[in-house]
Length: 348
Image (cartoon, rainbow, N blue to C red; front, top):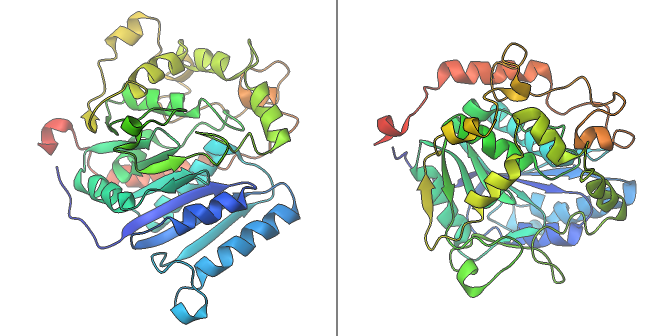
């Protein structure tokens, strides 16, 4: 089912920690009218915050071009700052709360280590606004993706037990599979390796002058050590996936999302019967009583001794509070009552 296409991109949500230089490049790359840009800042110290805010200032002065506006395509700039690193999932969840607050039909999420290729933001807008029955658009895996209101209604927030980063995408994608979501995959996607073929249909470039792909954890020694900790063999992110779903879902996820495809594809979720045959759970932690839907996740055990999750491994550094609170689910409940579920059959 196609929806009417509006004048400007509804919302861009970008996360940053300390690479203010990359954030500047990202904001400069916005070459299509964008109604709202939200910058979510996770900063470790006042110096990093000051540098980021200095980058943002010219982009927030666009009511009058003569006032020093750096990009006229950015209509409204919003800053949301945390005094600690809430992690990738927490940052996404802050963006999801923004989507609910502003009642956006969709938002594009990116890290500051991406930047839009010329003309491709407008192309992404056209694709996202044209299809009402798609939950998630993988524009560059989960380094740049669009979440629709339909997807938000079904999937809810990311699991903040993945802290500070990595494998939350495997979890979110697997939940979309279990829920029967239709998803978009761009043609030529090739993670960690860019070739002329892979760049042909790309929406963003990913990396910096020294690295292809994610560079955030490579730019901060402490963050790099925390990410390294998430690989703990018995308590880290892969062990947590098995704890939550009965199987290590990243392997299955990478088979699908990393498969080279010549052209953009809209793919229905594959049948989950084969997953259940391999021992996958239908409900989180195989507990349908406490977790009756895939959108729910454990909130009460990451500080326990020897608990299994990447947040638990890094419990001494992780923030005490989650971004997504229990009370926030009521906002999705309200959304669910007002938005009908669109199946593929209804969308044709």
